[in-house]
Image 1 (tube, rainbow, N blue to C red):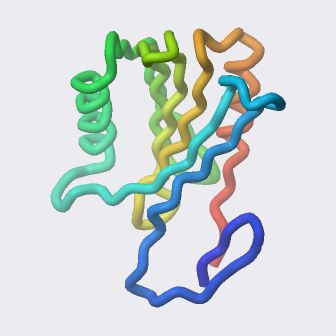
Image 2: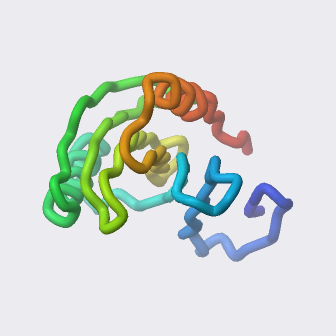
Amino acid sequence: MYYVQEGSIELPVEWKDQSINIISASQTGEPSLSMTMTRDDIPWGMSFDEYVADQLRQAGETLKDFTVLHQQEMQIGGHRALQTECKWVAKQGPMHQLITSLMPGKRVLIITATAPGAFSDGQKQQMQQVIASFRPRQG
């Protein structure tokens, strides 16, 4: 059984979730605070910590002026998570992100909160509260 916000669907066991959920605070369609949830497989023989470090290395190689501002370990929904605060420059201008990686199952779930420009202190605190509210589906 595969669940989405709107319901569920029966899928073959071999299929895996490659979806990207994009959630935006924009009321007008203009660039605004947003959150994405993606899933990924850790390459064979690589640890969770190595996977996160490799993803950050790749971001540094591909994103203009990519800078890690802060990293922290946390617990989300009973699972160890690594959160990286970073900034970089997109075509549209500066971006500020909180990238949180955890393994609530066999795959990595990456929750990325993004603000064009920079998060205000209040926005960053609220985004961290939203991310910390994640609870894995049981069963």
